[in-house]
Length: 201
Length: 251
Image (cartoon, rainbow over all chains, first blue to last red; front, side, top):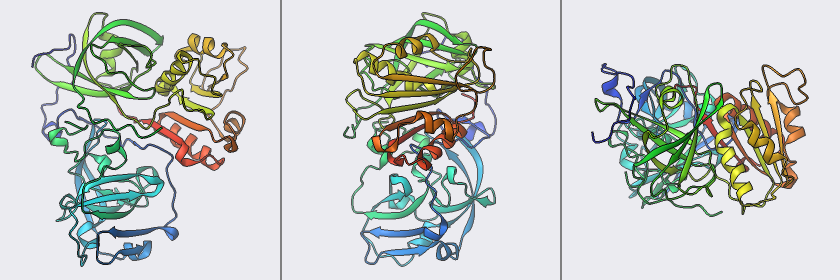
């Protein structure tokens, strides 16, 4: 290390938990909130989830139809680009594999889109094969609006801005296109273990 | 303002502390000289990285409180957080002449430019004033007369950050009005608001939705949630209510 900050010691973290922290992250027990605007509050009676874009036939579910899909419990560590990480978070959600079941597409990317206009882009292969969910419960309780309820995308192996809150659908895309934060200089992919916070990292 | 795409790589720069300002009992500003600083927009933030002798590193994000016109200088204002790891160092340990690693500027949504002509509403809770102060300083530096109202919620008079400067800015008669609310303790002669920000207060202070204001709200998460929700309920366009939240975690 070439540079040392005079007088800074920091907290020693030579624990089992510290090994689970990607570079530049710190452990939190709380659940901080990051979003760019007011929290949208769409009642489930008006909520739908859709698969659109480059598909042979778009799909859409009402809330009741969505909740009738097979779901699973997911226990994962999550990492926010604002530096906090939270270990062993417990979610319940529908696998994106279930949502894409029977969908024919040549797309290689998806744009997740949300109430309030938020979007984020991901490679399709990063939300399939058991790597992505649409989560509707956190810690055995319905997902609160400020944490993205009624439902949010959950892609825990990428920085958490990729796990779009208030998600309403996935648009399948032939080419990668930057979403909301990506347009403002955040990384197109966002792997916390390679510390891909910003464009060029 | 078109979305400014920042595609240049953000490199770590070695900044030098040139001035320290005690702002409030647990709040200190650090004025940093940053070589080759590319400049910033009011509302953007930076990442700060501290490295201990054994190579351990910690990073945190801090809003920039200084105006873009303050060339080559970046002011960060840091509040000491209980159980914090980085804030105790920045508030209690850092001396003038010390060096810190920093990269940025980061963000491009929670920003205000003097060219934006719509009435401006700024709502701050505690140290959430920092990025809003950058906007007010930018506004002043550019001699803007955009109708602007600041509503700033603080625990007590002593906790009000940038108090003297806010008084000066509001006295300039250039279209800025400031409103303080002191939620816990008020001086005996206090005539301002003395409660948490509520609907009635926002009805009084916020521009009417017909004037198409743009609002920036910054503070702790529950504060921002409550204020943003109230503004939308009062008819403000959600797309024109921009928020920045501080998590309740140690920083």
